[in-house]
View 1 (cartoon, chains in turn red, orange):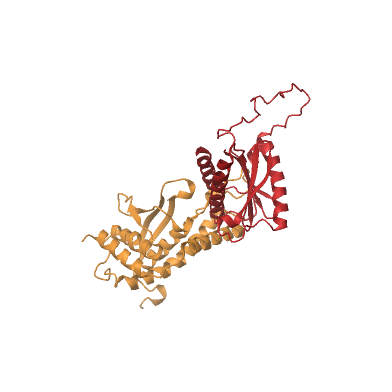
View 2 (cartoon, chains in turn red, purple):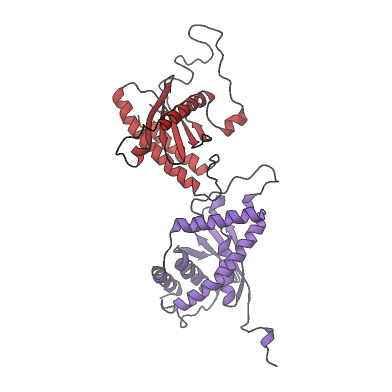
Length: 188
Length: 203
């Protein structure tokens, strides 16, 4: 049950960081579907419209597959709704648990989770797990992971050359977040 | 006791007596100073020169504080610097230690003993700093030419000027640019004669 994509969105909704990790981790299901063949549908239907490939420039700017970007967008929408209702807080929680929004929505075999801090919102896409127990324990680990990513984000903000609401370009943040997530994905 | 170990001990003693400041606040203040200078002057070479000037005025004041406190630490008038090597040890082991709390090494003495290098392993000014990647067009400011810690060069130059040593300092290696250590090269240009200036020349 590995983390496939992460999005960091500012409070106003503009994206700050979009990255997917599906190339590096071992997914339960292959990227292109159960039969590992992206071109043909199992029903032999030739009329399906494949998702357009990204150009290299788009890939550089936002290193995240379009498929994941779509799911992340809908998860952000759902997060907005949840936050507007203001009913999501677990009473009496402190620290990282107070920021944890939890399950947002699911699509295909991916589940979206949210984590909210004062200025930034985090949305993570995680693969569906088979057993409920595993899912619960992974959720708590995910919360810890999100708080660590948040810590790296605040450190990247301390760079005087960065500006608070613009895209995150820090290589240090990128490499630390990636290594955190590879560790998370490595523990199965 | 060799001069070097004496200096190291004195540095440690003085550091423990100095008032301390929050390291993050210090780094953030310096960072905002540098970014403001970059915004004002835009040319990184000009910013380096400004940082050097700022450092110079800091150094001129720091050296007085150092000399007044040196007695207490057992490095008073009795233990004077005999040559540039001793001066280098004093700057690195006592000066940097006392004001910044960092351990520095001295090395790279030239053949004629008129220049040396100071090596800093970690630089408290540049915690959390990452230089932005250079723009492709040469129209944008090429911040790779920016010497982020150029303040140190000014400080050393200003401080040594007050003790009649005219030096030139430059940053050779910088961890922000990918090197392993920060290296500041100090070159002695001339030893100034003690004097009150031309106006006071005796008739």
